[in-house]
Amino acid sequence: MEEVNKTSVKEFILLSFSNLNEAQILFFIIILFMYLVCVFGNLVTIILVGTTSSLQSPMYFFISVFSALEMLFVSVTIPNLLVNLNVAKKSISVTGCFLQLFTYSSLGATECCLLAVMAFDRDLAINIPLRYKSIMTCELCVELAIIPWFFGFGMGLIPTMFMATLDYCGPNVINHFFCDLAPLQNLSCSNPFSSQLTTSIIAAFGGVGPFIFIMAFYCHIVYAVSKIRSVEGKTKAFSTCSSHLIVTSLFYGTVIIVYIRPQTSHYDKYLALIYTVVVPFLNPFIYALRNKEIKLALVNVIYHQSFHQWPQI
Picture 1: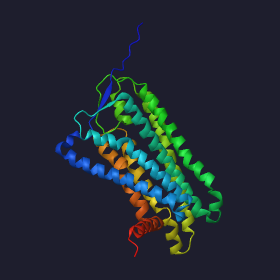
Picture 2: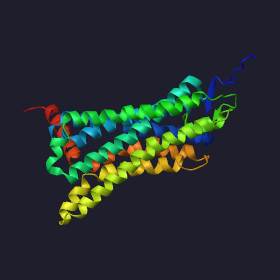
Picture 3: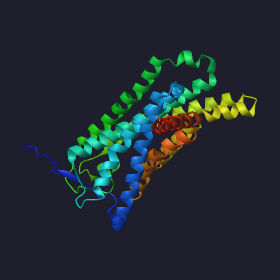
Picture 4: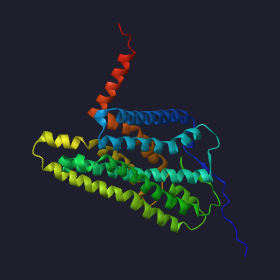
């Protein structure tokens, strides 16, 4: 019996935000501005942490790793979105689509795991401050920074492989601005049950798992802070993890809305903009404007640059 290859789709069409019509130009300018600010802000954070002695601590090391991850995360989807907002044919090859799916899923799972590592770091700093520096050695920090990347790319590879085994006979139009799991599964002409089951398991393990650890660490933090008698001590303890808590809440809040619901929606791509563009855009401001040491380091750099450029009399 002759084996027939059902996969006939050679490319996918990403509708992106075609329904905005003339407003796409304004939308392009806004997205481009947010993307550039996100990349520049995170790059500045990395440079400040790497060159300022007062920021040489585990907390800021993990912030710099998180900043590098954020730059990669936004660069997977946003440049392609910016191109599609300016071209008539918004196509992406099948190989490019699955590569984008793999990279996006992997970096998303990496971010979930890294947020859990950062929560663990804050838990140690607040609960056992006297032993914190002896436990969080340079070697351990590097290991804890590397683990999320192995974890994330392992989590991203499995569902992508299952998605690639499905048949795509047409239609090939994706009502989204990047190749995501649910829109691709909806286009499959074969039974997507195994892929959907695998995706659900991976989402629970790669996303919900780290979230449970984060909640456990913060419950431990709240318990430890509640035993501090002075209001000033409580405020100082909470201030060290407030930025991380805000970033985690923004990221997980929007991701849960999109991925936990049983059915996809026409508005998913608009919700996806929040955690792929808006939240990464806000993160440098959250970490910089709410952190006195980062603000001080930035002011010192600007001051020294201005001082050296000023003509000496």
